[in-house]
Image: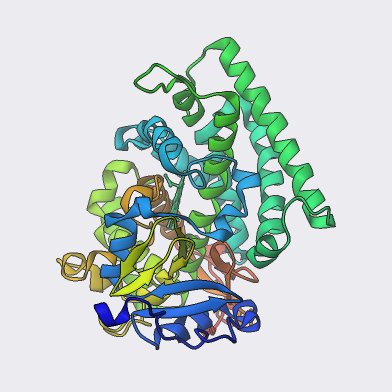
Amino acid sequence: MWFRRNKFPPGPYSGLKGWSFRALNQSPLEMFSDLARYGDVVGVRVVNFRNIFINHPQLIEEVLVSHPRRYIKGRVLRAYRHVFGDGLLTSEGDFWLRQRRLVQPAFHRARIAAYAQTMVEYTERMLESWRAGEERDVHQEMMRLTLQIVAKTLFDADVARDAKDVGKSLELLLELGADFRRTLFVPHWVPTLTNLRIKREIAFIESIIYRIIGERRTSGRDTGDLLSMLLRAQDEDGLRMTDKQLRDETITLFLAGHETTASSLSWTWWLLARNPAVEAKLHAELDEVLGGRAPSIDDLARLPYTANVITESLRLYPPAWGLARIAVENHELAGYPVKKGMGVAMAQWVVHRDTRWYHAPEEFRPERWEGDFAKRIPRFAYFPFGGGPRQCIGNNFASMEAALILATVAQKYRLHLVPHHPVVPLASVTLRPRYGVRVLLESRQARPRDILPPESRPARQAVSAD
Ligand code: HEM
């Protein structure tokens, strides 16, 4: 549209005043939801840096699928390059493409199917330490479990001890790096106390990863894990990854592959505990199909409601709650010019709650995904794993893992929310429950000693997510 050619889209912070840092700091989710009230294309100025916030699936598709080469990853993710290096999440252009081609086979359906057993085994091992009547932070449990699973599938058991050390270090790293605003405004080379601790943890993780790579190169053994696949991968010129590339990809997979899945499961437990009718339907499906035995990958096709529970949980609480890009070429969105250097942001948190695509969007209704609903909404009305060439490489891995863990745990336990414990979303790099999700465990395999006496059975209560 010619009349918009030089215009910056309207928005609350499009004038000289600029972005309200306070609003961003205090409640980014609320802030993005507010921005969406200005329309599908919203202008936001951060000091003198211009951003466009897009809310329509078609515009999101245009950026992620139709013109991905006109954009690079946003400033927040780029600020983490000292951690991820040139791993898949943060690299760009031809280098990224070459790496993606090398890593992709490791995530082939047949290959990840082999990890299903590990996922169930580790979940059962976790359950061995659970006792009916106990109180636990299920977010902590899910974090530990998904970390063990990604460690085992990346490095295999022969380095279980190392995986544990790397895990601990990564956990600390995640904690230290969780505040993306600090990461964005305090460069990693400034010797603050936090930056020095981050540097120390990275050095520790690197020393272990480089040692494992060295050992594997010497022995030439294929242990069936992701690292073996990465070591053997070579491109059409016969080139293999250097140790540095392997280090970057390994750390990326470790970090990208565990907190996201853990958070999505934590939100799922919380949603189930607040929606007993959904929980009962899930239990009925699991009981009918599995009858108490451990699930396998072959069972997943016969557990459609379980899959819908996860799909719906990823809609309401998407661990990747927003995506950001920077234009490296001029582009135009809905008639507004996107000039080189401008930022473009989109938020799953907002689009997944848009009444144009979802009836009663705040309600947790796995049933909405029955039939051909997914086909009837625009492709990018639902994009928990992103889209286009930069789509999450671990989406099948994560979906399988979430379904298997959910099925294994829900067959054995009902999780009740501990009254008055605040369950509040923290929109950090991922969307996670700020204070965890505290639950009381009730055995579903009602052995007499496991049944909670009525007086200790917690009343169902509403816990606000706001
Ligand atoms: C519920 C779990 C998960 C969610 C919601 C999720 C979400 C995402 C999203 C939205 C992106 C795209 C980011 C962007 O376009 O800027 C992404 C990329 C990525 N994810 Fe995931 N992810 C999950 C699990 C995993 C797992 C299990 C792994 C690996 C084991 C993984 C590895 C990656 C990698 C390597 C990328 C970068 C891909 C590339 O650019 O080529 N993710 N993820």
